[in-house]
Image (cartoon, rainbow, N blue to C red):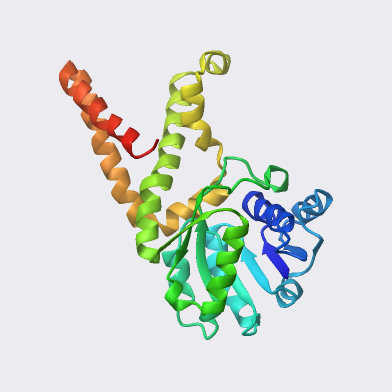
Amino acid sequence: MNISIIGTGLIGGSMALKLKQKGLASKIIGIDKNEEHLKEAKSLGIIDDYLPFEEGVKNADLIIVAIPVDAARIILPNILDLLNDKQTIMDVGSTKDGIVKAIKNHPNRFRYVATHPMWGTENSGPAAAMADAFTGRAAVICNQEESAEDAVELVQRVYDALEMNLLYMNSEDHDIHTAYISHISHITSYALANTVLEKEKEEDTIFQLASSGFSSTVRLAKSHPEMWVPIFRQNKENVLDVLNEHISQLRKFKSALEKENYEYLEELILKANKIRGILK
């Protein structure tokens, strides 16, 4: 099977490596507006060749869209315009509802499967790709009833080859849940990094005193804005909802300290400890 991957960075590159390793792809074609990424991906053995957009789409059995969600929303109708009824397209964006609605009435909508593999790091580019990155993690397929049965089956085979655990939900629910467990984590990390940078002017001190806890908490703050600003834009209402709750929780901690109410502070921490029963 020929697979074209639009976006040869972290996610697309990692998928390409694993799909080649598992023998699901006989040839992987790269499509990317960043020519340096294409050259690097080919030199690293991530892709076999790279082609212009239209040629790359037409010569693939499966097209994987692995670019920022705003760009995916724009490019999907153009890809669907080129497809025949034997080709399948899937995207891997962190938001789903806006993308699904953007192509809802396209005559080739049934060839598209909306998905989200739940993995990522703060790194980017082809050199960051890892073949076993997805193993054991969750992947979501959204609105499967709107996609052709054979298209969904092919995407299921892809995620089986990536060794991921599949979940199914509608696009609206997906965006709510990811706001809670992913998007708010990034905003919190960015805010904490900015707090420390604002209050601690000695960069050497940050480096010397940074514990593993601090480093893991602000790791996401290294993530690039070209990926995350579109995610926040497309999932704005859900992100604002959870952000308001997060601010409310921070105010509780602030109030407990201001009033020297350490019993309440302990209650807040013990309540937070319940997450252990969920995340083991």
